[in-house]
Length: 281
Image (cartoon, rainbow, N blue to C red):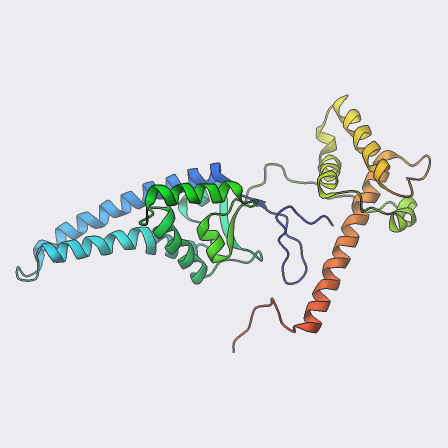
């Protein structure tokens, strides 16, 4: 099994096939959330202005109003996203509209501590960014662009990332190892076939029916030639190119799964229970 580009592997040695959200989709989601926060702040401010005149006159002064205004500001920008992301398992209104979700680095749902850390870092250095706003905004954007998973500073601090829940094309199941080529594939050296080439082969095999000729045939021959040049021994003479590509991909998937399971067994032997949730009774 090809390990996805995200590198996410659960404690049960299951590689997660998820697509990290990048700057564009996350920026739109943030704009939607900002609009909702502004609306919420306006509603709370109106309620505050309605309630204050009802209080005894000796309790209401400019200091009280300023303190309540600061609390309102903190509730909207800090507590609101924290509560919403915890309650919805990582889907604020903006993220839900864009088909995004916040998850932990191990693929699990976020908890209150993760949402609190994300909100606190965002409140301090990202949005609205109380500490040197323009400088910290630039730093946050640079971090997201440089990150392979598109993670912002809050994600790095909380151990989370944002992924796409919607997939552009529903993938077809990858083919298994053809029986006629199983022995050859099991003994072949596939180390020269990197993730990029394996990913291209997987994309072709799952979506080949969508391609039209002559593009499909040309891509098929190109991928077969590149794979055949990187495996040793070479494919058996007369083996159909389609079956060779299927055999190579399935064998890589089998070896990757075996390595992940072996690593999990070794970890459990050396550090029993490491990486697994603690069940409290």
